[in-house]
Image (tube, rainbow, N blue to C red; front, side):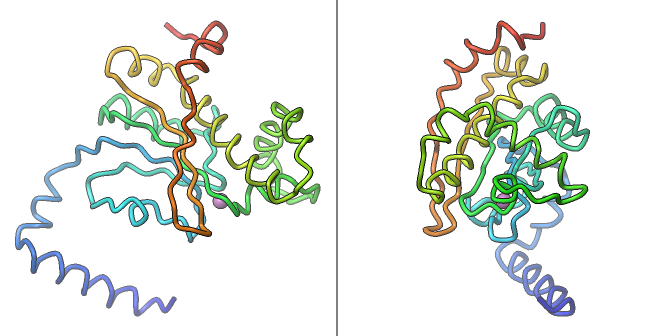
Length: 208
Ligand code: CO
C-alpha cells in the first residue's frame, strides 16, 4: 500500500463523514462510550471494526499476535482494566481466526527468537488439551481446533483477572469466544459455556 495514498484515502474518508454529518468529528472528539472490548489478532486480514460493521466509538480494541491474553502483558492487562473498570464495557470478546500464523508457528518446532516466549503460551494451550488434539489426525482440522481452544483459554485468562470477575458480578459483563473464518468471511460464536468454566476454575482463581 502506497503511503501517499493513505493520506488521500484519509481525506476522502473525512469528506464522506462530513457529507453525512457536518458535526461528525466535533461529536467524536467529545468522548467514547463503547460497550464492547475486542481482543483480536494483528493479522492484516482480520480487520476488527470492518468485519463487525462497527463505527468509530463503538468498539475498544486490542490486537496482538494470535489474540493472546497473557497475565504479565502490561499492554493487554491495561486495556482490560481500562475497558472494564473505567469504560464499563458490557462485553469482552476474544476473537481468533483460522489460518492464524501465530498458532501455525506454535505447532512447529522452529526457534523463532523473541517470538519463542509469546508462542510458548500457545504451546501451553496445546499441552492443556493434548488429549483432544493428538486424536485429530487431519493436520488442517487440528490447526483449526487449536485456534478455537486458544480462544477459549485466552477467555479463561480474561476471567482470571480481578477486574473482570468484579464486573461479571456487579456489572453484568459477559465474555465471548469467537473465531473469524478468513475463508468465508464469517464470524463464528464458539458458544463456550463460561458459566461452567467459571464454576470449574473459580475455586483456584477467585479474587475477592
Ligand atoms: Co493470527
